[in-house]
Image 1 (tube, rainbow, N blue to C red):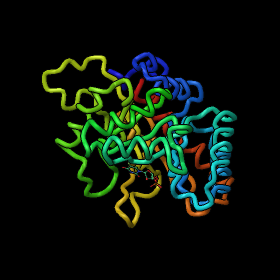
Image 2: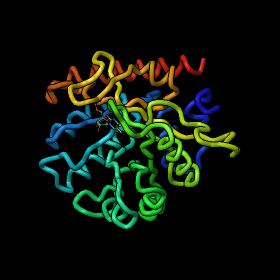
Image 3: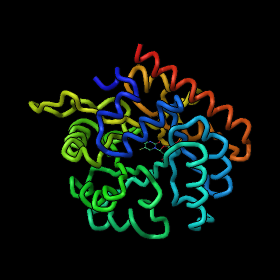
Length: 272
Ligand code: 5FU
């Protein structure tokens, strides 16, 4: 089963080039940490990425919250990913018809497909959302995650909905490389299908070492609960690392180092 294989070994389980690159990067940097940098000023964004990047395999963005966005920011982001060897995940959560998501993914001011290695989509419209996004992303070698579960209190992405998300992914393995989820999805909803050898990446937000949640429904679990107990592959950490002061770079760096160590220790414990 995938969660007992090393990240490096698992790169062979995928044909999608982004999935391979993610797993190879994790193995090379010994990091299963993705930092979610949810700040609104591009200078803060760049400074935080530069500080945490040595400790991450991935940076997660919400590019549409940047107030002083211009396309030169993308060149600066790309410079940082080359300098520090990590990938970009734009947490866009597409949720519309195929034709519309293809336009949202390729165009507008953000041109997400041109720079984000990975993005995600809600399965709520059905398989057509994958077809729309794949028409743009596959030729570029990009990857897609489906939101099979969410970290928030009262999430509707449970049970039958989650199972159907996994079945949708299973039919589009060339482009859908995994899930946003709280636990492993191997074999979920498979009924009689042969799913031996199946591998999906599980990226888990809602991770914190101190807090159990925020005032708006977010719920946190520890890196060990996610990676060791639930078999998650990548922990996504936002405020647990950058806190309340985006300028406190020394603290942010120390926190990134700390979450990286916790995530990797939980992974080694899982392999042992
Ligand atoms: F799909 C999800 C989810 O289920 N929970 C999330 O928290 C995405 N997220 C994102 O992860 C959310 O949009 C934030 O960007 C990030 C979590 O930030 P935090 O500061 O660690 O709570």
